[in-house]
Length: 260
Ligand code: BTN
Image (cartoon, rainbow, N blue to C red; front, top):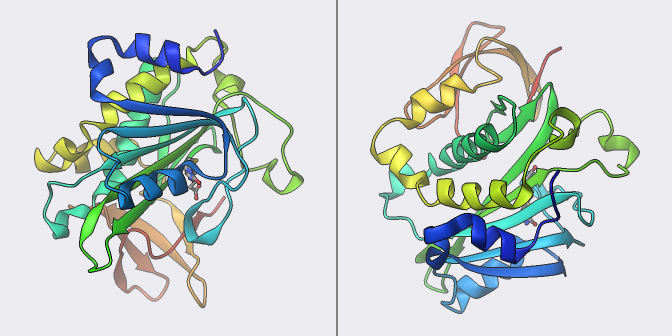
């Protein structure tokens, strides 16, 4: 990796796009998503991006924590004020996954894949997790969506339970520019809604799916085995259970495991 994550180099990599983002850069924070949610509730989140070198309370999907040690990853939260209708907003989570893949493909010599809903994998290791959180005012009006992204960049000491799961870009690609990757990620994120509007999302998502055509375990109560058939136009997962039932899993409700 060429240098450390820093605001100056992210801004210079953004070039003429620099003015479009208000980058709030922190050495350490609890959670960049929490910081940005607070700004959104104060109506100060337009164009804001919170980036931290480490998080002490990084959050993942389904109430899990996200391990965020110092100088090891990109921990970033980006604010989207959706112009989509409510029915299309559900596809945003998949569109963000495609945006992350595009930025990785451009900057590291890898072809990342998306494990439904939106975990990014390479060589069966998780390189990136994504957490979208809606921010609503007291009358339940949607103020926007906080898009939280954690990319594992440089290997660090891992808790034992993560050793078999987590991978780092530096494991697969020696020479990448973390600041350029961050800048390209921001530019891709600013086009996320277009993927949905111009209907290219499903094609782009399917190209990178790690799940379609595989046996999976649906981590519901109770857990069950199934076969992942396809995704529909909103990137919901169409599965066939062992009893032959066809079901559609909506994004965000359930997690799956791929059978080895
Ligand atoms: C997951 O893997 O379940 C999602 C992880 C999302 C982690 C990112 S890191 C930046 C942002 N701040 C957080 O607290 N979480 C997200």
